[in-house]
Length: 136
Image 1 (cartoon, rainbow, N blue to C red):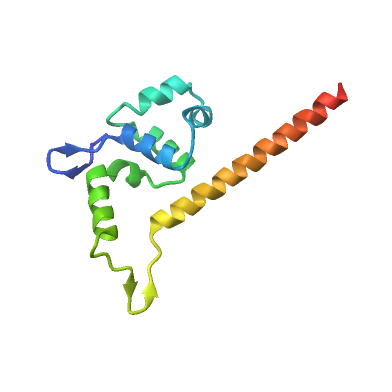
Image 2: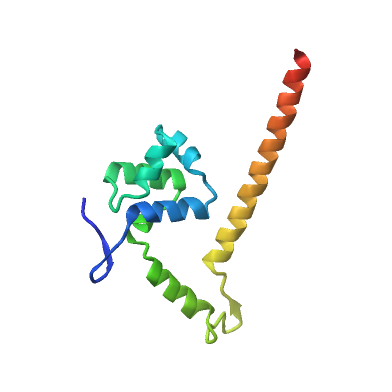
C-alpha cells in the first residue's frame, strides 16, 4: 500500500485519522471493533498504525460512511489552516447575499441527531428490560 503525502516530508497517519473521524462521529472503539469483528484492543492498535491495508481501510470507511480518500488524505495542519482562513477575521460568509453553509455545521447537527437517537435507543432498551423483568 502506498502512503499518500499531504505535504513534502509529511506522512499522513491513517490510523490516527481513523481515530479522529471515529471520535468526530461519536463512535466508540468497542462499537467499531464489533462491526469489524475484532477486539477493542485490535482497533486501538490499528489506530496507532501509520498505514492500513487497503481492504481493511475500505471496510472501515464504509462503516464510518466516509470516503477512503478522506482517511488517506486528511492532514491536521491543512485542516487547521483551512479553518483559520475560513473563520478568521477576513472570512467572507456572504457572497452576493447568499449564505454559505459550512460542512462543520452540518457535521455538528448530524452528531446531535445521533446522540438523540442513541438516547432514545437506551430509553427503549431500559423499558424493554423492565418489561422482561416483570415477566419473571
